[in-house]
Image 1: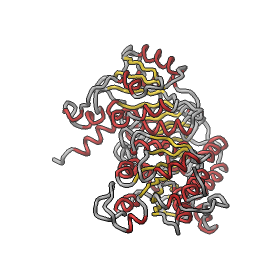
Image 2 (image 1 turned 180 degrees about the vertical axis):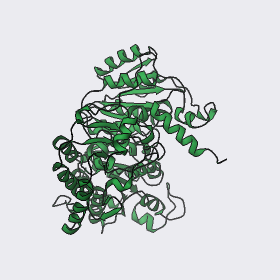
Image 3 (image 1 turned 135 degrees about the vertical axis):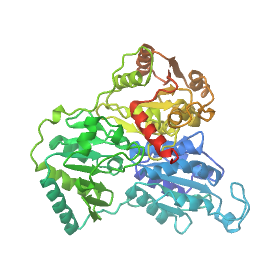
Image 4 (image 1 turned 120 degrees about the vertical axis):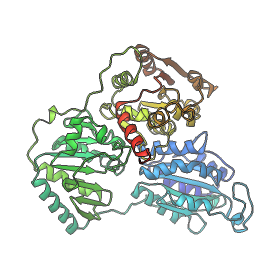
Length: 554
């Protein structure tokens, strides 16, 4: 029973002030006493995961829905297992707080050869590793605990990247004073002179332009610009698109939305709208290989205004120290003063490829999924056939799209869906994951069933690593996986909860299973039998490009 206010309580209260209501993780002897405080805390709920990697993925999915997430691991073995997931959060700008329960300070000072260490008396090996994938890190002591907690949390929130806290088991119990004020992030504003210089340069470029297109991506989501961008498209609409990581940023049913841009893998009309505009406004965009079909984008940088988190480029001129929100507000006001563009209502995203096959294949799969989606859905897709098929969907209003194409760790989507459903229990989560990816993280299905969550899981069974087959080695056994009885897996992972499962191979069966899943009061898993070598059209372009780039020079 808690007898005094401690460092543990201070940390938990600060997490709650960040909007974090759930702490994912795995118990270990170095964090058990801290966990007692978690259980007693009225504002946070403990969410036990099957392993630390899954906990990191779940915290990442949670952060994508709630703005920040947190996980708890034990020292050494636990924290290292989680680092792959934390690295993904770092690459894709998610403020996930990683708390590591560590040996007592006296043990560390004595250089004792304790379990979970490397047996050399050194205790900062793993913090040095964690520091590489966090924007702020600290090892807490009685003297620095509250100040360092505040510093790390503020840095993580302001930069939208992970923070790392080592919490020795004795420090966790040391007395502290409750915070008197909420965490305050330092306001970030550009100097009036610099902002005016940017405004002048942008106005000069826009003034010479007839056709302007807006291309926005994931950094606009991470830095909270979705409301402003949507208001802009309502009041002063332009032709606009996202890239895969930012899909769901705009209302994809709205006037002027032209689709999800993937460079050479895009439909010709979409590519023309983005690449051949007189000016392309890029907001929060990063041109990575997976997003651009192997860097096949063709944008004249002299005609691009590129808004990044701390700088803006107008043509070839950079303006540093301008926050994204201020830069977007300037562009919004400049575009409001332009004449309304005619014919925007004629612009439409490319339609899905037509197919009326009775048997399931990529084209019938995605057309059926398109018809199944509804407003406010959270669609979570794994990297590979799932993501490159789903990218062509036109999302219903107020829907969200979770994907990890930059870090690209297969298996991410299943625990991320767990985190997303935990963050938003009132929204429907639809998870689409391949059989190869699912085998990496399938244990978290049991956690979802235990917690009474009801996501709809579409498991694409194409008998192995189909993306790798398309790139290289289509018949090689390294692209094979063990064949599982997927319709039995969900039930086997819980003796208390219930789950419904179906296996389908025909389009009519798939539609019928989806109708049942839509009204099911438990987790639903639909095993979708797919041709072994069938891939989405967009992925075919990417894999050809990657295969060409990997081929040895002649």
